[in-house]
Image 1 (cartoon, helix red, strand yellow):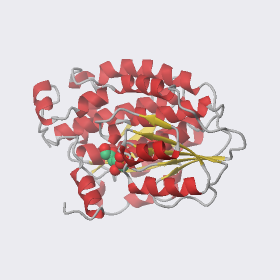
Image 2 (image 1 turned 180 degrees about the vertical axis):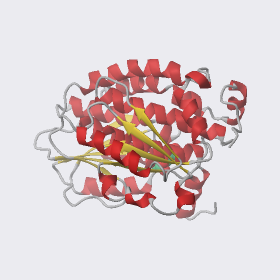
Image 3 (image 1 turned 90 degrees about the vertical axis):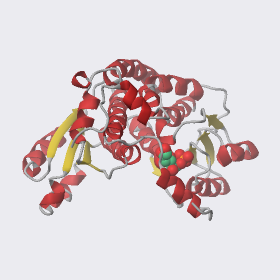
Length: 359
Ligand code: F6R
């Protein structure tokens, strides 16, 4: 399949990307630094004594901040972190639960409904939003709020939506040393920015190259257990929302107990799939072996298989590196397909229809 837009032609890309998604994505390292500043702002956080769980409420581009947080703190937070994406608040949420309500717009009904319930049950709540009803409620109910800048797409705000949560957990004494790691990761991301930038030519730019290779294929993104699995979920949703194509994710070792079998039929569909395996240093040695064996088992069934290995000295750098790589790839893929990456008309139509308006 031919590229609709030349990924080395900044003017052509700029015409299609009228709202500047590429620039916002490219600017991720700077967003992470600003998010650290937001996370350090004077906000009176709940007390930490006696907490037994953390819950992050949020949907879509806001909800992924819960998965990112859970991955980042998994090595040091001594209580479970759950990402709640829906209307149902788990029964264990109560006065000993720290609840982060995350909605970029502040108007997402699932998040607001769970927040109501969390408040009713006496949970200790913190909000992250750019405005909307969530910011209004925070004001009304005296809920601490990390206010993030408005005017972006939620999915282009992952730094703003996740880093303040990490800052809050650290300020409350629940984790240690992560804020410094996030600061260090922003420096590493600066180096990646040069490599992934729109001014970096296709031959030297791995994100443009992967986007070009993915043209005409359905991406299936596998991650090894932990941070790469969360990155795989992010890649999937970014392919959906930016490039407007179906995409699927799964993770090792779980997929070895089901999906590995699922490539044996529908040869015409399987051959149109492009498998990207996300990996990171420190993955379990048996997972490494599983990836090798799985590739051997399914290589004749899928169209292509490639691997992207996270670079970075720790879990924060590696997760952000994979996220950044996928974000940039998804925007280049959108442009190569002739799609404006920004609009998500169907999400908006759906929300309007739910609200009872004609869309
Ligand atoms: C749009 C996007 C969506 C929204 C989701 C929830 O860019 O990423 O997935 O994040 O519809 O809306 P918010 O984030 O405003 O709560």
